[in-house]
Image (cartoon, rainbow, N blue to C red; front, side):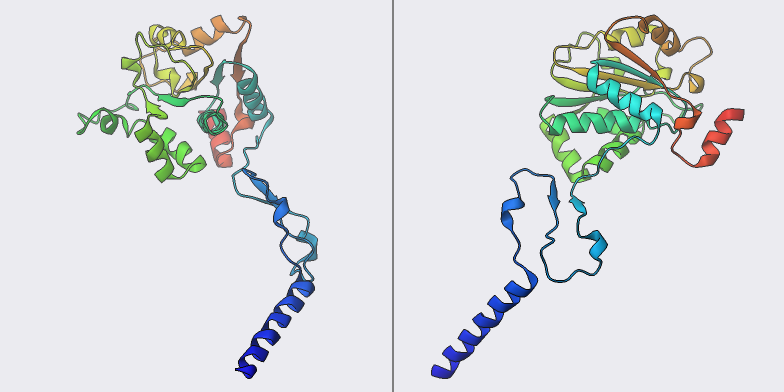
Length: 263
């Protein structure tokens, strides 16, 4: 009995000595709901002393990779209606969806509404099985990819089941008023002037709408797309931002920027 008590006392003494040598984690620095926490630097040993002052981030940080992207992010923060026009690969859709997720997570909006025209890229793939969301899933795949990059796919499905992320086909948007929402209209170059006019006038109170598209890649017949005309008409309107991205804003493979310049 006495021997076992002696062993326990020795073990406790070793634990206290180890704590004094290597340091004890200070829990006071872990603020509730904090997303960034500083790693403990008071430990007695570090494999790389130069990294002792680094921050450990638990969420992906959204940072612009070009001046055009920085302008787009700023305009989304300060305007309720933003039109982002530019070639493929400039991050228009990704930044719009990322800002939508950021606003939803911060409680600035109550839901995210995603809309995209169901237009094939030059060929018809026929009728698709399933309900409305199943039929639209192939067309909305780029939006799902951007969502899953900011949130886990499990969380995306949960938010969709709760109605906090809504898939709204352009054909069913007539007559709606979207209040307290972040609306993303993607591939707007495949919308006619009448469709875009209808979509833009859906904007309600405490809502933000971002319309993205590339006027040079319309899958409609020549002269039918209304994106360029809408952008020109809205450019002088106060409190509406029209951001034009260029080849230097392309963040995909460098060959994409080279091809855009000659195609």
